[in-house]
View (cartoon, rainbow, N blue to C red):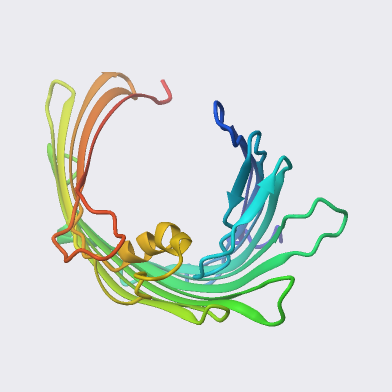
Length: 360
């Protein structure tokens, strides 16, 4: 940094982390053991430019996931179905020996952002490029043949925020677009066996009402997601295409009382609808009907999720609060049933209690 230009400011942020998971089944003639380790790190550098009040940022992320799954039959013959696309794979018969699958995934991302303020509007723009690479192998040897998946994704987006009505409200909008292309290859076959192309457009807007001196606060939010993807299996010559829309919205009202109690009520709903072109599972392999058809059928089903949340907060001291929150969610469909699609309605109650301790 140049000491003669005090308006040039740098900020650096680093976030390392690691996630590990291990699971094991018990009381079964076919024990399964799974392990996963995922180290990750993210870094970011921002600089306040000496002109226009602009802020320039550069970010990078990396994570690597190493996962192993082991199946050891103790009695008789066991069958393992190794999914490799939209076909019904031939079962791998395991007799008194281990079946092992090792999956190594690498993700690298780099991005840049630019932000500033003009005409009382704070704005930001960003672009990010991601690279996903995955290898899978089953042989326990030094340099085993591997199946691969490689994908590249680009995300661009921006956001803006502005105060309205002389500070009585704040308007915030955000939008992103993501495009991804990927392909898979098998070690024993030449060429691409599976290809995917996805595009996702997301928009988000919110208006918050209420001054700092008012006991009432309110917010209204609207979201819209447009998703389109195509997946093609060149081995079994099958493909699936989904074009979906997901509009949603919600409102929240909060009231603070002189006793230090605050109560809020939030209601939200959305509607998912899609135009789909998926394989007819009738007459296809049992593995496809059990493992693949239900997922594709859910993508093609119209659903309407709803939620209601009530939260109560009580001040118990300087910068200290206790709170309790109750949330109810429901999702269901009145769409025509599809073959092998799970039916029914799901509801969920969630109670949350917590304590917030700030600087005394």
